[in-house]
Length: 125
Length: 185
Image (cartoon, helix red, strand yellow):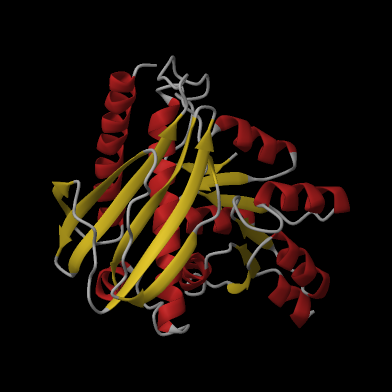
């Protein structure tokens, strides 16, 4: 029960930038969430095999497996974890692609900290 | 497109670059002032960090380069992060991320000119007395920006095909989101 309760508040941040992973971690940590990081889609899928998370914050442009490919893989696997995209991309076509694969939101960098925290809180409510 | 038209387009892109750079660094708490177009080859002594990001479009390709001393990137680093990883790794990473965000901002502007950039993943470098000669082909301009922590250098390189030209906005130009925007669906 404790592990399930703990897993309810774990967020996976998928971004090839360690600064972004740290920045999001420093925001969500004090907001009551445990944060783990992955450097791209491949790393994220491997980590999800070992750890349950309540939400994923995911970049788009990453090496090996980009965010949209990761989202499609997650969607295909039937994993229901909500995903918010956090990216420099802002084009409607990519946003629609993410939405089609089940993404719950899209935030463009440089992001407003309060926007990200509010989105995470709402999705993990 | 004529050579003069290409040069005018390049000048317009420089305007996007300068304004986007000011806005971006301001968001990270570092006020920068554009000092000079066509800055001389930067060869700063001491540790210098550069972020480089390539792009391609239908009739245009090149890269953006951001270079500055470690002190400039330290000043722009989000709070409390420098105590978590090796400092050099974080500073290089930040340079790459700034190149990424800067080019994304320029990309958003170019959608309104009918140009759609595809962007690579950034690479970074760190060394003493970094020298970054401009490419021999294509069009390239250095910009220098003054900041309280030192000088920031940004360069935009572009090679234009003969048929390059600004045109009507890309259909999704108006609906594209920019930095700071977004939310839940």
